[in-house]
Amino acid sequence: MRIGFAGLGAIGGPIAVHLARHHEVAVWNRTAERAAAFALERGGIHAPTPRAVAEGRDIVFTCLPNSPDVEQVVAGPDGLEAGLARGAVLVDLTSGIPAASRRIAARLAARGVGFADAPVSGGIKGAEAGALTIMVGSDPATFERIRPVLETFGKRIVHVGPVGAGDALKAVHNALIAVNIFAIGEALTTLAKAGVAPRTALEVINNANGRSFVSEQLVPERVLTGAWPRTFRLALLDKDVDIARALTDEQGVESPMISTVSRLLHEARAELGEEADHVEAIRLHERHAGVELRG
Ligand code: NDP
Image (cartoon, rainbow, N blue to C red; front, top):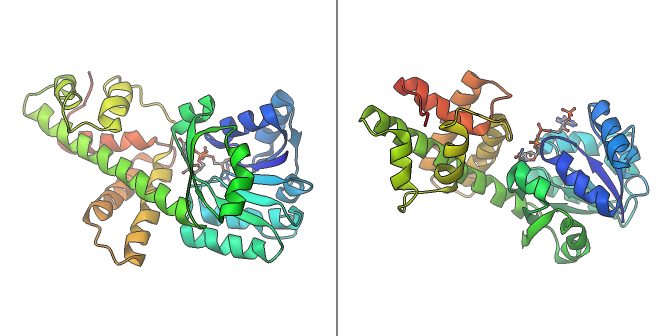
C-alpha cells in the first residue's frame, strides 16, 4: 500500500513508525523538521504540503489535536482533498467531533474519496507496541478495505458504527477516564487528610472493587512517584470531555458527571497550562486540599 500520514505528534509518530515498517509511507507535519527527521530515520518520503502527502496514496491518515485542525488540513489548494485521488480513503485517527467527521466524509464522498473516523486508545505505550484499540466509524466496505492496514498498529479493531460513531465512543470513553482521575484524586486527598497514607489506601482500593485503570496504574506510576510524565496532554482530555458534553446535550441526556469533570478540567487547564499531562489534573485536588499524594 502507498500510505500518506499527516501529524507526527506524541501518538501519530509511533503509529507512523509501524506503518513505515510494512508500507511505503509519505509524511507531512506542520513543523517540517519533524517530518524531515522521520523521513531520514525511517526511510519515508517527506512531503512539503498536505496535498503532496495525499498525491498517489491509497490511504491517508491524519492524527491531529481536533477536527477543526483536520478540516483546515483537508481544505484549500494545498490541502489533502486536492491531492486525494478518486478511490482513496482518508482515515482520521484524531479523537474528533462526530458532526465534523460527517461533514468531512460528505465533502470527500463528492470527490469519490472514502472516509473513516478511527480514534485510538492505549496511549503512547500502546502505540509503540502496535497494540492500540481502534474504534472505527465508517461504512462497512470502507472498514473492510482499511482493516488490514489498521492491523499494522492495532490489536483490537472494532467497527462501531457509521461515520462519527468512532468519535462519539472515544469522547465518552475519555470522559470516563476523566471521571476516574477526579474521583481518585478526591478520594486520596480526603483519606490523606483523615490520616490514611495514599499507598495504604491504594493497597486496599486496588484489591477491592473501587479500583480502576487510573488507581491501579496511573496513580502509582505517576502521582505517588512524583514522576508526572507527559504523554497525553490535559488540554486534549479537556477537548475530549467538551466533545462528550456536547454529545449529551445533542442527545438530550442529563450529564451531571461529565458536566462536573468538564468544569474541573477547564479549571485545571487554566491553572496548569497547555503542556501539562492529563494525570496532573490531580494536582488540583492536592492544591485545594493542601496535601501531596506521594508514596
Ligand atoms: P500532540 O499535541 O503530541 O501532536 C499534535 C500533532 O498535530 C503534531 O504533529 C502537530 O504538529 C499537529 N498539529 C497541531 N495543530 C495543527 C494544525 N492546526 N494543523 C496541522 N497540524 C497540527 O498530540 P497527540 O499526538 O498526543 O494527539 C493527537 C490526537 O490523538 C488527539 O486527537 C488526541 O486526543 C489523540 N490521542 C492521543 C493519545 C496520547 O496518549 N497522546 C492517546 C489517544 C488518542 P506540530 O509538530 O507542528 O506541533
